[in-house]
Length: 534
Image 1: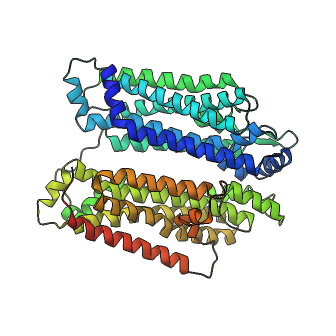
Image 2: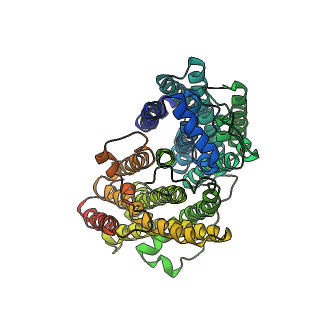
Image 3: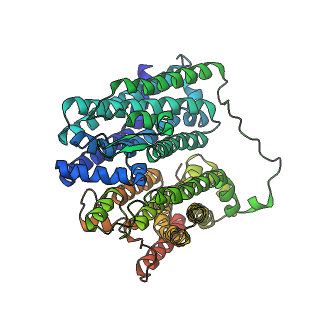
């Protein structure tokens, strides 16, 4: 197992380092910005009172526990860092599990004199060590924000345990799912679902304005992110709640090992649906093939956009207690907590929800554009291009379908947001929510174009480049105002150029559309100038 562990470390030394160091740098920067912005007891009390008075804010942040440095740090940072850590672990488990099996690497390893469970054990050890290292770095980040030693250690331990819990879930999903893509999709859905359940539980909880605390509803208590949040590191330090995450990890890992020992190589618990005996006419060209390859993922992304849209009306209406406020301090505080640049609180919340939809659409577009690179690396694109099919048409089909995926998400988010507002009898915000979803679309499509251009110019590094650019765009879009980054840096994110509906200046939107067209056209042209790279 030691040599297998060394092999996995060799393969993942760059990817895992980027995940860990990038997350730690975001944490250190965010801690410094929060300490500067909410450094006094009065400022901490003000922001937590505002959050408890507007339950919608709790959906995007977390649970406060009194006015203190530890409370404000935990309230601002835990939930979104937990999502990042959850995705890191589920993707890692799939990469060294079902994906390796799908690509034939497990069969090669199995042909050597090693135990059948050795690769799974190496993945577990590597993942646990990575989470412990990340937990220590994040504990150090909290310590730099003047959180006491016990609170910092509790924070680091909670992040590590939350990551290990999702690692176990990812290993189990890899044993259940038939393909690596399906395992990644299920794992990501579990992570996002945990965040949504936690958000719903916090939003529906009972606030106590006198003590600045919250009693969350039951959805918070049925997911790993909710368990971690309720540790309340930096204030109450409920160490016993870490046993819930450890228990989930143990159950998931034991189940994964048990299934792995009893199934055949390449088999799965969830069956892979057999295809048709003959191809349909829709597969007669590159566009039809790209559509067929990405259709399941597109449906899943579209459902995610619809769920986000349905939540928009209820979350925005939950802020009704303070929508009448004209206090500039209230507005400015909400702008830092929920970046969006709007002047009315209701529009601010709707803008943030549609921004999240834009980030979802950007991820779907980038993933769709990168699918061509996967086909190329695994040798299937070579078979396709052996016929009378120009590379430009293959790239064009991939880009068009990727952009359709982003369009579907934003239209679904906008349409269901419109319906959710109408259900509350509020037609004005309904129209603005749908319009806001549409104007987020050009910014989201930039990331699909960048991913396609990376595939056309730097195929071997395309996946890393595309997701790195996406991570930078997300970080700047969500945290740029809070971190007080230079204006030029904030303006580098496409999402900073999205106007608030209604608007009169179409210039930024038209420029973004032009950038989308230029990136797509460049990818289609430039892919003709390089050789295939497997």
